[in-house]
Length: 149
Image (cartoon, rainbow, N blue to C red; front, side, top):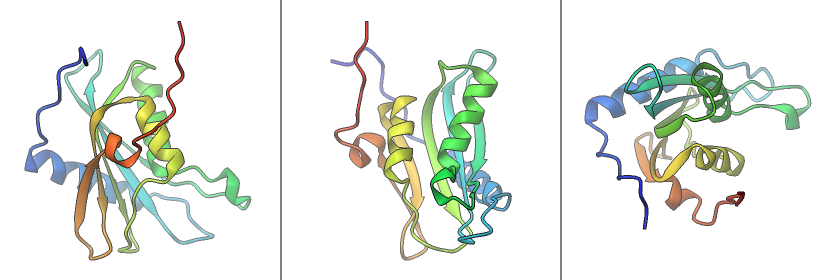
């Protein structure tokens, strides 16, 4: 039994704003190798200084592809840098400038899980150009959780 109350559903205005911010962040992506520019915007459920905040990030490629950082991870790192390690993600949206389907990769799903609850909403573009959503628990049903004292 969870002691954390479930989130209220996202409003249409929240969804639109997250998708707009993710798309805007994609314009700042550094993707000279793949030309696949991705942006992410996350809605924090609460932060110490305000009831909610939206933080954006974009992908940053590297000639050594393995060193590339995804948009979702950059947004989460920026949120932690701004608000500390206690952040909790209410929702996260991704967008790309290629019009392609773009779900978070496995590493990003695990990173999102680290700062979220099972009902955290993930919004992402599909193959037909529309957007869909799923919870992080649906996208990563057996995510790694380190049990510590």
